[in-house]
Image (cartoon, rainbow, N blue to C red; front, side, top):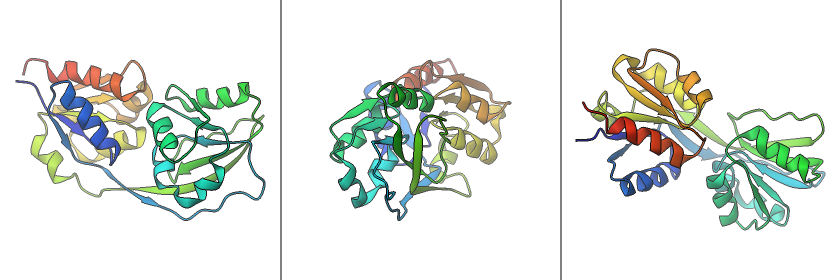
Length: 223
């Protein structure tokens, strides 16, 4: 009998991860650590050459203000973000591999000198010297104060999936790590979770597919 997966990311990403997990024959339980809500924002006075998306939540919660920008090139940090950007009407999309510095480097390669970064209130700061960045905060991701009941019901048996450094730090603050197995989407996220876990592993690449692959190995370990 395999261990269940504990999916801690908010919707709609949680449902996408669960669907992939079920397709792999894994049981998954959703217990989001964050609630996403849109924030009001206004575009910069100077029209940018391109738009930078470092989270799929930015296009999902950016609202009607994105319509006037959809003719611009979009730089998406990863495939899930690119899919969300395409769904709101952008058709010139450059997709990165999940790393913020990499997608900024691709914009630099293409000669972009001014870019609008649409981000969450808690985001990875991007400050290149040679590209002017106007940043707008378009959504907030509010932390839960106690561990969700669904998570309590499957821990410590479940393998917890950590999709971000912020989630890793929050999860570590809510549980006793000694008896829990975690799978992190990157080495940076694994480091953010801190020490003391029963088992801790990181994905080879910062993608949901790679994360689920390493988590599946933990789920199938003998109890």
